[in-house]
Image (cartoon, rainbow, N blue to C red; front, side):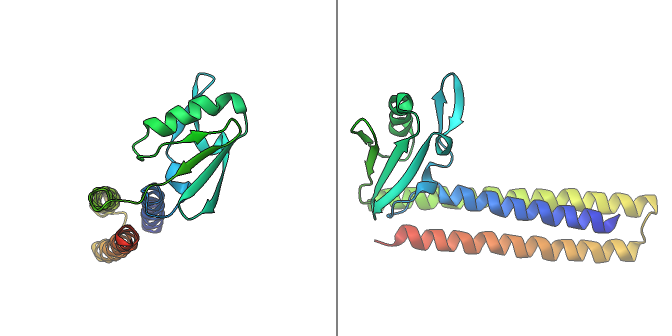
Amino acid sequence: MINETMHEAEEKMEKAIEVAKEDFATIRTGRANAAMFNKLTVDYYGSRTPLQQLASFQTPEARTILITPFDKTAMAEIERTLRDSDLGINPNSDGTVIRINLPQLTEERRKEYIKLAHSKAEDAKVSIRNIRRKAKEEIDHLVKEGKIGEDEGTRAEKELESFTKKHVENVDSILKVKETELLEV
């Protein structure tokens, strides 16, 4: 029982780390990266469809992205979604591909992105702590019902605390890497 609780908590914490990595990938750095479009959805025939399902991405140069829609009729809607996004980009279409030239990041914009990265990191940490809290409540409940001994419960709580600390440190290291990328000129 306690092993299931611990295993489930660790799996959920790993998932929180993966979500944090995906969130960090959507934050634009100085280099072109198709991952920055991961969270964008396009209104495609009345339903919200992820942009990755509607087009292919290429990065021929460090600050250029080519988006080739699979269905040319979706081009105008894709362009509108890109223009309306908070990425600060201006797409140009030639009828077959959408070209995005990423402007050089200003110091002010870099600071905004760093604040956004810190916010996403804090969200991940809160998520990890909530997972810890739920697992701890479950352990306390097992001890209270007498299904496990107090010593076993204390040991499990210490192990849970070490899982939590390890995952929070992982989020911090991912944040540090993202900050370094953002500060790179």
